[in-house]
Length: 147
Image (cartoon, rainbow, N blue to C red; front, side, top):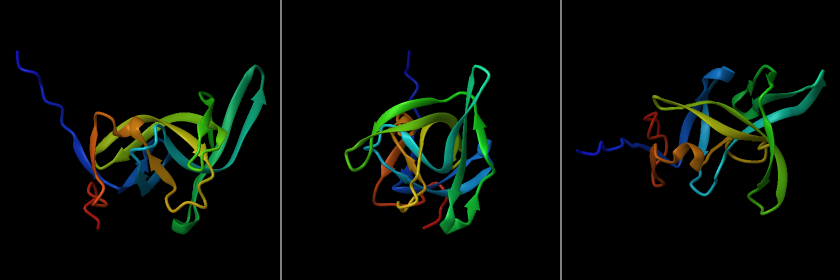
């Protein structure tokens, strides 16, 4: 019996990524093969405590592109310890949502943090890339055809 070959899509070091469930249009995302989990820039991250239930609230923003989303409420979320780019351990909220890169939609895990001092509001990590994409770091915007 022949094994079916997996089809990998090619991505560059930067791609446009949309978030259909969050109604966020495509924004630039840095593709980072060294990051385990993907990251989404958020503001106003806080928890509401109700009757035996915690609700995570946040907004997705990108001031450079004039994006300020509505406020989102997630009942399913976790808190995890992450080693950030400077090597420090920090606690972050973690959610699952859909990301769209090119024609592919993927339900993936994202940690939420303030990335306002970073160039890109989204970091696409190995949890999205693995078994789906090959990365050509010499190119950008392979999926969108933008250069």
